Structure formats: structure tokens, C-alpha cells
Length: 189
Image (cartoon, rainbow, N blue to C red; front, side):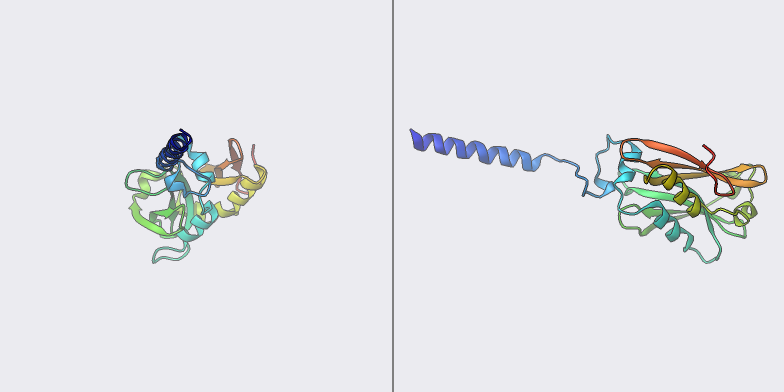
């Protein structure tokens, strides 16, 4: 009788272990591309191995033309064909606009797409970005500091008078925060 109970307990433990081994779970150590699809974008972005500042640097170093400046960055959760990535738009002094896809887990460039600048800009010109006192990278650092050490994951640029200002989303420990940075590097909200 004891032998049967021991054998039954062993089988139960084995089947439970196998069932647990087959249950998918997302852990903080998993890449953002494997994160639970039910998580909000900022929660997935927070787990990304590559920060937005590093992704901006990678995007700005691409292309044949020098002097490109990042003007827009969106974090995208992993999809059926794409990894979790930053979609970063870079404008060059000539007015050329290119969107670069930077993998959020490896930092590698995985796609490049030329964009029609007319479709993107309504009141902004390439020279507005070249003449900006505060770059998008600088605005990211300011926004992260203002948000108490969160991780910036999206950024948008707008025109404020004759200068540009930035709207940056920062993923914090338990929420997202939006920070606006003016052309002089001062926080506006």
C-alpha cells in the first residue's frame, strides 16, 4: 500500500512538473519581444534591453548624409513579423527624412524606410531641427530626470513659435508620464 502511495505521489509530482514546464510565462529577464501581449506599451518598453537614447544614436549614425537629427521616436511592441523596436525618424540637412527600425533588445538596425517629408511636416522644416538649441537626445535626458529616473520610450517634436519643443513619454515604475521640454531645455509641465 505504501509503495502504491509513493508511486502515485511520484507520478503526480512528475505530471505537475511537466504541466508547469509547458506553461508560458513572461519574466523580467525575457526580451521585450517575448513579453506578454497584454502588457501596455510602456510596460514592455521598460523591460527593453536597449534604451531610447542608444537607439537614437544608432539611427543618427546611419545613412550616407552626415548631420542627421532624430525628430521622432515611437516604441512598438513585438508583432507577428517585427521584434519590439523603436521606429525613429531622422531628418537630414538636405531635407531627406528616413525612418529607422532599431531592435529594442539588440540595438541593431533591422529596417530602413525613406519617408516623404511633406506628409510628415505641416509647419516644420529641416532647418528647424538643425538650428534647435536642444536636441532630442538632450530632451530625453531632461525628461527622464524630471520623471524621477524613468525610461524614455517615445518622443515627438512640435513647433513652438520659431523653435521646436519635445513631448516625451517616460515609463516609470508603475505608470507612464509625459514630459514636455522646450527649445531651451526647460521642462514645460
